[in-house]
Each structure stands twice: as C-alpha cells, then as structure tokens.
Image 1 (cartoon, rainbow, N blue to C red):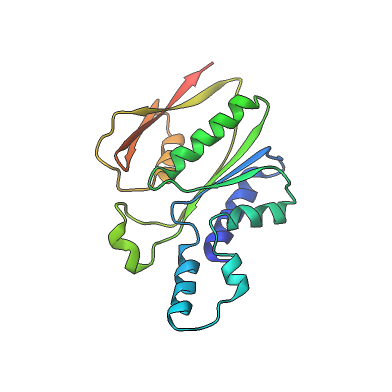
Image 2 (image 1 turned 30 degrees about the horizontal axis):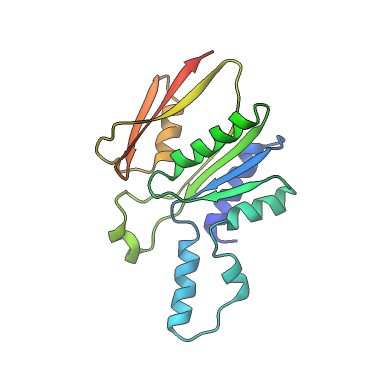
Length: 189
C-alpha cells in the first residue's frame, strides 16, 4: 500500500470501529497521484510497468483495499471533485441516507502532499490529512449542507476545516472552493 492508501484505510478502520457501514464513500481530490507520477516516469524512461503499481494507481484503490481488509461487501464509491471533493462526498452520503433512512455511511476524505511539479496547478495550501466519519439519520439533531453564495476560495482543504468546526460549538461553517460556496449548519430535532 502507498502511504496515502495506508492513511485512508487506517482512518476508515478507526472511524467505523465495530460498526458495519451500509455504504462507503472514499473522497480524494488527487488520489494516487504520487504512484501515477512514478508510473509515468517509468514510461518516459522506457521501463516496464509493475502490474501491482499499475493496479494500485487508480482512484478507488483505498476503497478497494478497505473492503478487502474489513471484509466488507457493501457498495462503495470513490469520488474526486476538485477542491469541493469533501462537500460532494457529504452530498453523496446525504443522498444515500435519504433513500435508506436506517443506513450508516462511512465517509472518508483524504489527500497527500502534491508532488512539486503539480503545485503550480493547485489553488490550495497542500497538506496531508485524513478524515473519517460515520453518518446516519440522527434523532438528536442533524447537520445540513447547502450551497450558498461563494466568497473567496479557502486556502485549506475542506475536510480538515470541517473537523476543526465540528469540534467547536459554532452553529455554522461556510467555505468556498473552486468558486462554489458551501455551508454546514447544526440543527436540533
């Protein structure tokens, strides 16, 4: 496993604990970019590609490895949506729970540092992070996500900012990424 896959799988295992999720969502803006870059370098040098490295370079690598390790046979999706990846993962979880009210969704958002040559194409401060959440329909309250007017794009990725907000008592969090505004808010039932 790459360092990124290890991070994502460890976060997923810790977040899920003994719970069995009904749906898995693995979100990464860049995915296995470091491994893909290594493969491209091998091609440029005329070297043979490693079948193992090639099979582990796809965007759903971490989701697949998690299902093997956890022996999970539930549906899984791998999602990438630019700087708004975490928000779209959250929407995917909300959609699943709205169709399956008793379901538990494991949402894992993670990324690694970008290789130097890709930094000019990023609009955010790059950092290594992993966030794992088990989402379900709650009886005591809920978190709502909605699109709002966009502000200035935030410099940090959404998932770590969401977790920092989650650990506070602030009623809402508004973020902008790729010119799209997102707002999470806490609501009592």
